[in-house]
Image 1 (cartoon, helix red, strand yellow):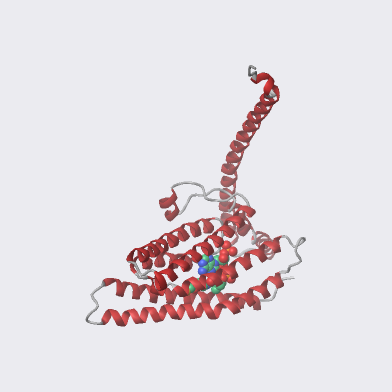
Image 2 (cartoon, protein in one colour):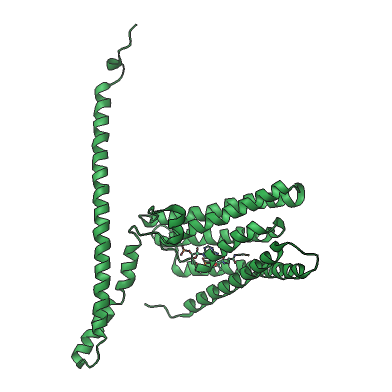
Length: 320
Ligand code: COA
């Protein structure tokens, strides 16, 4: 029996399908081209409009206006009040130049995600990544402490910590570039932690690991509820509902966080005492002591500032 490919498979159907795919690809490339042209012109429009707004605001600052003109100026000012924020929100969906750190690590690739859902999905993935690596770190740290006291396992754990914190700094820079309001200190915290992981041994890793579990629970709960707020027709959740959940979560989490912060202070002070002993010759001890004290100061003051800010904004009267 001979093999005839033309009759064996539906050649014409396959050919039509291929032509269709080629056509779709052509349209797709065309649309991509249109989108990049639109991005360029839209970015230029936003920039020009922002400059015009500033010029107009400067002109309106002029003194000695008649009562009628002053009223007009007030009306224009109140209409323009929301514009800068709106422009910033629009800009968040346009490609922009990376900051110094991302340029050094990733080059000039565009890290701005094109839609709200992809930004949300990236944030979800970031929280999950933290959880999974924390599990691995916890297992490895327990092994180091209770089962395998080899220098190699120690080194592996420290290497994993350095890699983990480095990765977090990159992911957080991408999140910030996509409009996340992560406080600068948490990013600095991960730089300091990267440095510290490079110089310290494993003994004090247990508490931060446990704390990272609780933080994951709180942050993923916030993310879930914020997403639900955006789809209120599906899930009956209100802003007040979110706030009450957030406060319950925070009330549970805060004692553990403060315990962790004072644990860092305790580590720092203990290391300072050890480093002052005459038999201590390793420079790592004093460096680790400074890092722990720095981490305590930054973590404690930033967490207090976050809670104070949340309390103040809760007290503010809500606009109707
Ligand atoms: N690391 C990374 N991102 C953080 C963060 C942290 N420690 N704390 C807050 N964020 C992010 C939030 O997810 C949010 O992101 P979004 O704008 O993309 O939605 C943004 O920063 C603003 O969050 P904010 O409203 O200020 O705080 P929150 O309610 O999300 O979290 C705390 C409040 C106190 C629970 C949180 O800041 C925290 O866990 N702090 C303690 C961290 C710490 O001390 N770690 C060391 C332990 S030893």
